[in-house]
Length: 316
View 1 (cartoon, rainbow, N blue to C red):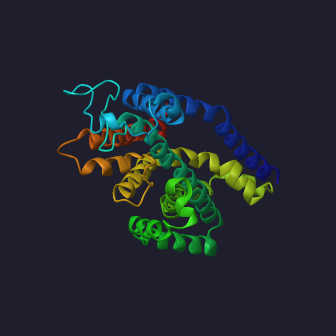
View 2: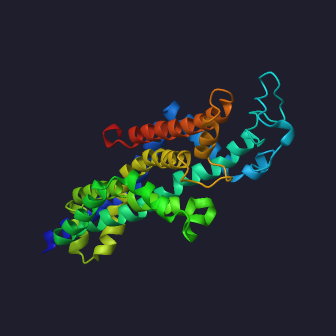
View 3: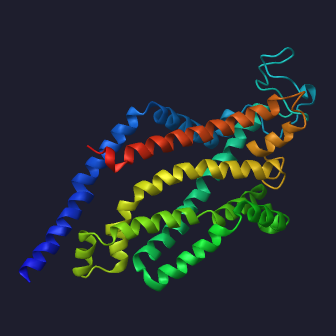
């Protein structure tokens, strides 16, 4: 009995050390490795600046994004003949300042990138934790539900759902943003659920988890206190790669006319507005396209750097 108790105590001490000094050391080393990745750090700066632009867009933009300037309809960018620095990126075909719309559009795109990902983590993380730890029939039922959602053509269903509900109350909230967020959150959490379940299955049989159960810890405490902290690293990395996908979906839906409702600007409907004038006013479509490319590359490079930094095989 004494030997068994000592083994349990030793296992828990090992886990406490991992959660404490060793865990702090591992995260510190990961942060140091991340700082050495120049592409990742530049990406962090770009991401932070984009979110600052989104938050303070009313203070940064010179004009209201819906304001029409009749004296400067289809004005070219400032560096082209006939352009003026009053409208640095020119104006669109109804006289709205492209730069101001680009700045305000960051509020939609950056929110679309962040808010659904939080729901992916909440829904998918919860399903993965319960399925992985409970096992048995619970795991089987939950994963069959996950398989059903995974087999669905999510983009096609999102397009159908948004189209059907576009003229309803929820479809009119925040220019259609609420409906778009709900549709994205409803169908794109399955990858997170599978990842979390796999991590839980790997950790729940380790000695410190067995020791916690032997000492009478409730399943909820075991999952939240002893397992969840260890599965965060791969989930965080996955989230950084998921954000650009959500932004791209919004851009696609807005481009085909069922995303954010005009005149509220988003980078997607700005590309749609400029597509018809691509050969005469290419800046209208090029500016938001570059913005989407920049944010996508920034999150991709940051995700790559974060994955390398958190790779356990690289730990000193």
